[in-house]
Length: 286
Image: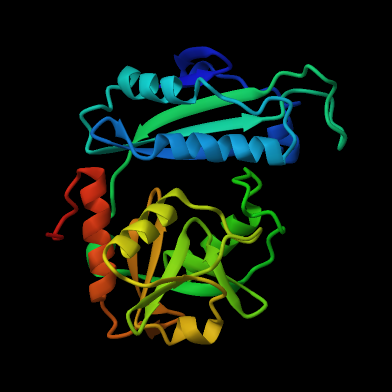
């Protein structure tokens, strides 16, 4: 596969990351993952803006990435992924290479920019039938709104979910639902969609933004406000949303059925409207 590294398109095996890179040493970096549907990027501009906002929040010396779109497009072309139903491009920026220190490196230190593309295979059975999720205590830092590469708490939570036969771990902080280890989350109660507000504990998800807009267009009331654990557990429907999970129903939470234990009607509407936006029909959905 051809990847991108600091201005060059090269075979992935020829890329060498310095052991003094701050991403390697300190997780001092940010990233984005963009979904391509048959070679067409989904909400690419929003992803770039979020990357640049993250760079500014972390006080990177460089906070603009005009190469974001052309690099992604070329990687899809170079790797002949344009005919694939779905692919992803990963784009990562770190503060660069410098002697290890908690202090920022000297002015003028170049950022390290890396990107790679690969085919993506949707787990259609999860889209169709729903998945199990578990809740976990949220022990992450207070700036989860930044898409940082420091993902160890997410990794541990996700692994705990997998070991319990679930596909997602949903973080609870002070009795309130936040988000999943690799997704945003929403629930439906009495015809109203509920999701956590955008705070430091929640990533401003691109798919979340799209799905909430589609709900409003369909006349589904949306409340972006605190979601108590009690409301969440009593929900009629739950869904996780994100670049790789798209709109996936949650039919079991902590070993108990959600609603009727099968994907509900409003989540089905969200799925249908979302996949209409991507231009790719999903499995058994109309």
